[in-house]
Length: 320
Length: 170
Image (cartoon, rainbow over all chains, first blue to last red; front, side, top):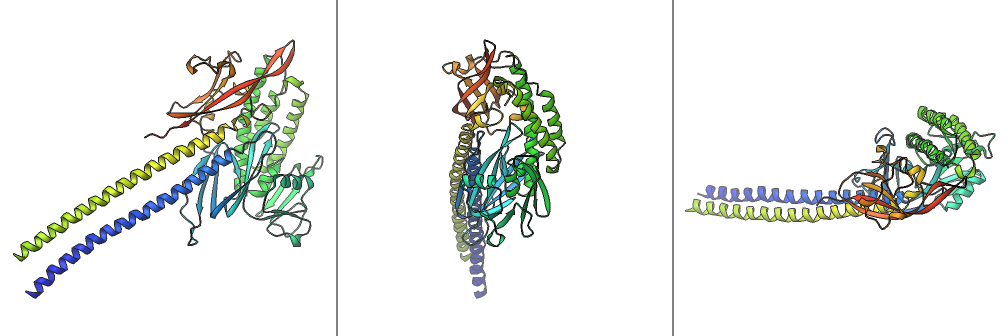
């Protein structure tokens, strides 16, 4: 008799524990899911808002203004670049996460695609403060804005006056200039050969107004080549992001060249004779064959030639 | 008797549990509905924000720019109308530029620009994905080459940029 009673009690308890436990587990699981979805949603929204902000950076012909982005908690920005998708322009994706109170990095938000911007930064940047500045890029007409994002501390060692002035005009944070490597904290960017530098910039243009008009940047045991404002893109971005965006820019350059070739035909109706088509096709072929920044010098020469042709065109008929 | 009593207890408990599960299910569905509608609202406003920030600087984009700030080059613009590669380049669902002369006309009565009738036309339809959208507009200067007395000059006027942003399905 006693034993039967014990079985009856035990069944009730087992039933309650199993079903109650299941409901409790479900509730905790759902709450966890909600929180995760909410966190991912917030990170995705932040990434979208960041892209909106970056969109507004499109400059005219002059350099735009810099912007400082501040987060309450330490944030991570992840950047990916793919020159082969979304043909012919390629695309980049950006996603974000932030550090929680416990110090753990939260779940990243969804990837936000960027098709009409060229963001130059490390593939993963973190911090509370991010600095953003745009620089227009010409070949010789404007091809795009180079949007540069960084958060690290940089020290520019023996920077030429032109670069010093441009950076100071942008009022950027986390960059100092030094003429002595002993007082040069952060990532050292050296403009004159020095051993203890993470980034080395060498000007290769001896016959130019400024020898840094085109040149090479050595970082992470690799060399990348630049001309014009690509110098800033090369300094602040990873080699992979730089090379990928360079190909995306070349693709946009080819499309823009076609627009200018068609424009030449349109303005010919008004009596203009620009005679630039053949040269533009020539440089488009060079851009098309470009497989890395190492071949940029040849392109640089071709661009100078196009600029000369455009300068010679009578005032009202200039193409750009 | 005892057996019947415990059966009744289990039955009572089962009813209670079913009611409890239903109650939680209703709460979860309700919470999902609220969260989903909030996500939709946020997605719409974020997309609109993105369109708004893009449209204000669109005239500075190299595909449009005439060499001055917020100025569209009509001679460039005419060459990108309907070009498929630009459909997914900007984040707009449609993009049109209306000349000043057509500001007071309805869109269906405007003369569409093409290489044949340019510049004697009123609306430049860059592309239209033909999806439900909300339209956002901005203004810019539109310039194109004109010839008078053998001299070529830039003729400029005000133009309206209309960009569509995809509407979230409800």
